[in-house]
Image (cartoon, helix red, strand yellow):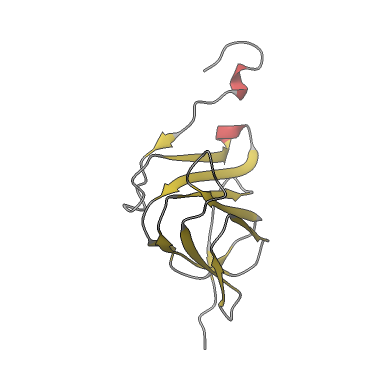
Length: 144
């Protein structure tokens, strides 16, 4: 930890291997708020994606806002997006297909998911910014 009056504000980056997704081969950064960030309501996940997989398998909602971002995996050309991502919204499961660098705004309470990394020709970067210190999902109601 850094020294000095404000040293507590510099926190070593929590770089780790994914335990949830064996498809994510590169190390991830997962920052959790709350006591780790002095009470800030913020979480961040950063992943380098190289193969298709189902990231979120069920529709759900939560009591916080969230921003999800997808960009190209070449840091010198993040506009070059080599993937196809599917995201579903609402109880009716409205499908949206992402084929270029994009961010998804998920207001609190909005039912969303599944989130499927459908195709990857070139690596893409996934960043998730839940505005909470504690990520909790509420399953969406079952379809009738």
